[in-house]
Length: 278
Length: 278
Image (cartoon, rainbow over all chains, first blue to last red; front, side, top):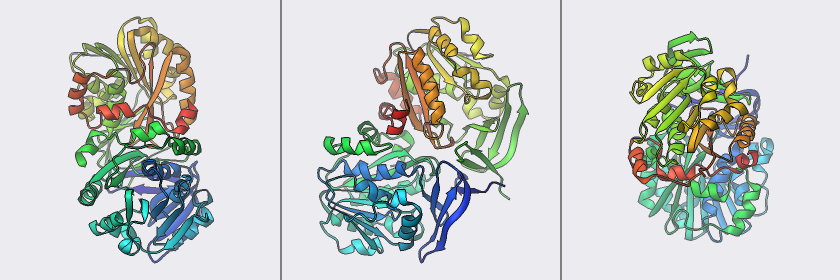
């Protein structure tokens, strides 16, 4: 009998993937970490506490968006902080920008990093890059005393429950803002606009208290329920679509499966139901 | 035990919906027609030969796109043909354009129309509008001798197997082209760019033989596998984004859950992997 991995939202629907063998399954101090081989074109699948995080086959949908949309708004991003993102996909995309001198990955759960290095090499491949510094610690603590350090902060977290919960507070975002250099930009995954409208609304209410500029962009994620995802774009000074670097943009587009200039420009056009939520 | 409806593509993944009771299930001369009540925010679900067609909860994602993107490119759409679309959702959106004098619905399977009228009233609600003429017949035969009749032809078909198969041929599209008035536009659902890339490629190869202008637009459909869908936009003379009617556009936006001018303008920006397919 075919076995399926299913992720069903509280709304009563979601995704299903044919599964084959489990490659890794352990309980860390924070969550259940699992990687299984699927019987599908998605290849290997990473779940945390049974929630879909990423797959080999569609991970670029998420990682290209969270990295390139904010980074292409910055004239010279040198120092980048990635919070969460232990699979390494966001770091891999960040390092495509040749302006980057250092990317700090602050991931609370070392088991995620180790498992992804072993079983998801196409995603984690840049975690050993000398420009990447890995900190296995709680980003909530890490960010508390940082000031004027980062051009870009990418919050590549799990959902607002479990270990990711403290990343959805006003105090945390206030500290993130303080860690930014002038002209800095924060990008945070902000859930599914269609199936988690309450979570989306709550998060933007919070972000707007902290950042004078707070916009939303969206794109398709095939393996997240609803197939549609939102990210928050926050800054003290940088408006959405106010800048795009031609030189870097052309080089990065050649390496991407999704990202290009027109796609970038189209991302902030939102459906009516989402505009009403925000 | 919870029972699920699953639609798994040949790629090995897809969608799952908690199901409750079956409201309608019969074999027509063409296909198995089924409507069930889901235990989800999606409400009632229509499937044909066990493939997801639409749900009460997310149908607007599909119907607003197939109707308004092409219709808003036309200066004065009076006569519209909808091929397939027996649920009535596309007709409902077409009739929001006050320029429309007549919309012909040519659906091969009368059982789909009858079942949707009875069990999906929020979708089928305009099928009794006096401006709507319903023809229960094969569109392949119907279109053979039509000439200079329609401003807009919307091909709201099933997938290229089963009763929809003959709608994916050069002969059919050539006849559709002949049925257009000058300045006419054809829009056809063209499958999932991510999970059915072969079907997408084949269809566009065909369309490009027939139409000098053949573009693609995409949007999110939560209940189709991959959550992302493509439509072909074809014409002899009308280029994508060459026209948008402010008066009609503003009125229609007020009635829509997704459609607005910025969203419209963003639809033709495609990911790299899809541009390479086309």
